[in-house]
Length: 434
Image 1 (cartoon, rainbow, N blue to C red):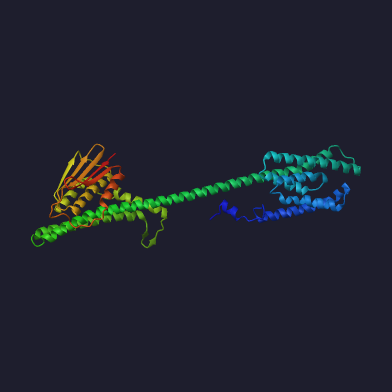
Image 2: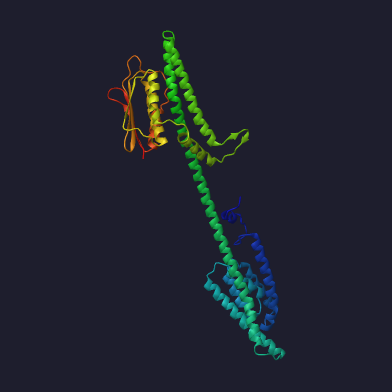
């Protein structure tokens, strides 16, 4: 992993105002070199000024050591360099100080002003000293030599450090900007990863609920009918062997149908989920689990042999074969709708009939299906059960009505359920088809 800009800044441990130790070592070395140079040049300066040589050396040492604070106070370093220019000392001090000033965050107008002061100072001092040296040695040269040498020396001591400092400062600011941008992008990517993980977790929860609902719809109805037929089989086994044989055949058929539907659903889920195939372990990223589950669960309805409204009569016939008195009425012209709409409508009727088997065995039941212009309406209503037979003794998980409501609501429909005034129970749903 790469370190971010904040981590790099935190890792710096230089003393005082230095960010790094190597920067402190460099500045100390430059300050020592500048102090030695100025101290050496302080001897002729003291001789010309008529002061003791020791004073000139101390003055040069103090002036050269100012380079130690070039990073913190670059303006002060340049001003000292300009001040000692008439004494013919501090050439290293002037060059490094001007470079440090140009590379700092000081406004450009201040940098230009101080660079101009240093340029003029070096130009004047070099012009005066060249004329004095030429006069002392009584050398006859052209008038062009002194201005040319003075201008060349001044530009050579001012322009290169100034331009180099401006370049380094601009590059440093660019690198800081890029580092800040990289830190910002890394934070955004981390936030996106967290949100993707949250979405994947939400998707996994939704698909677990959806798969559990599908399993409930597939198993509960078939098993409920099997229990009802098994009870009837037990009651008539000795009295009417032929009817017992028919009930046994129905139980076997329903069991096979339930297994077929379960195999189809699990087959689609298994084909969409990856996992292990023939001993080969497949590693799936955590964030992709929710996506794979969503795609697999969607194919259960879209690509699988899911139920449709044309099978409603067969569904009602199975309940009638189990002993339920059920009437089916269809209003409107039957037409094909989206697979998900038909599957949801079928499951609502199926679960409502299952609840009648569980809680009101023997009650007369009415199933109504209406095809409208832009919606499909269905209603399953049962009368109060007879006093002698009120329940088939089937367990109830309490999730049937909740699952129906979730299915219908997911398609933008309306679901209503509750007891009737006559003591029965009614389940109604309206699902839009467009």
